[in-house]
Length: 140
Image (spheres, rainbow, N blue to C red):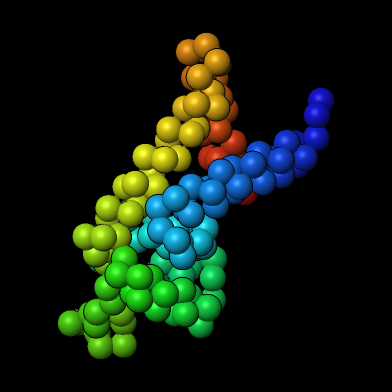
């Protein structure tokens, strides 16, 4: 059997390259790390800065700098939680929603182009395998 780590490392590198190239098409200064933050913000209702920092695995100091970049780019707004002034809430701006949607469209198109030669059975098998692997890694 092939080495699982090698396969995952190779897949991860190729997907990361695909994401990086796609980010550049959306916004000149949009990095892979910043796109991950946009994605995480979009998945949650009024998330705190700390919550998103934890989800992307970045310390709060580095994360604060990244959020400032997103604010300067007009993609994110940061506001104080009215119930607790120590907590900052993040939200995508209209431009941020549009940019993330554009990025998702580009990524989906490119991924579909990469797998267009596969049969429906093969595509479904890959999807099921990825779901099983994700679940197995998450629970360990």
